[in-house]
Image (tube, rainbow, N blue to C red; front, side):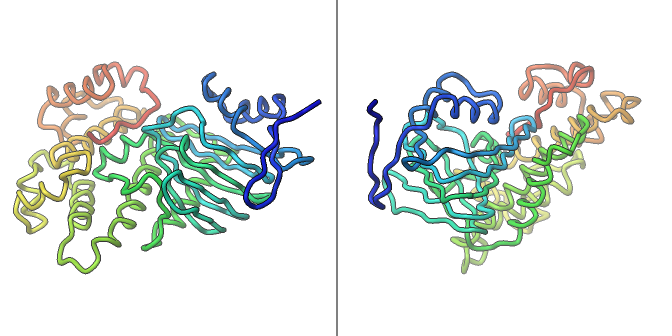
Length: 331
């Protein structure tokens, strides 16, 4: 019986993985549509005479997925079902991963390295034997709505490193099957993962801002931090935020240009995220909608209802009755 083989530049002969093995991988990944399952069967290769060994731990938190994988030597060819609009952030915990984009140099990653890919369907991936990696997957729009725009389709997130360890450790704890969260716990964990990812990307972008008196990324980071602290003040608006940051309103607005969101949207989204937490918590059930709106920074229940309709397509009262397990995007 013949089998399809191809020989990579490193001299290794690669062969397709048996259908039964791929089916086991798909089961571990959780909900995967038929197109992705078929493309996995077509794209995954292993060295000839070697079996694929892979273990996957998966945790879904609203729109964010945390995956912990341990795999034997394998190669995933370009051509996986389109993943445009999905952002993948990965940590190599042990072993090595090689990424081969269609229009750039090959990237070899070792233990401790962090990378981000905006479209897996165009990247070839090769893992060394017994490579362990942590993956965080989310819609790219989540970052755009927070004022963070990936600067390339494939990035190695070097530069400032202060948030690497907190993000890695928190994502690992979230992926632990022993963690059994409440609805509020899931909302808090999802929000924390997103906040840490925003910080990771902002730190990476600060490298290109270095040497400027006040680069756009640095100012945007300060604005987002101040918004996080002060959004429950109903008086906070773009003009007051600019005043608190000691810059002109126009200068602040320019810092958000091209980031995927505006100053006003960032403030509104922070308030909406606080409102979802209050509505989901059982010990705040005594609060009226007016109190929820005020404690979140909305000037009126009308603003609160409008924000919920835009984000969730439902009223805050419906959310309180059965909150969806997804933290709102900021925008």
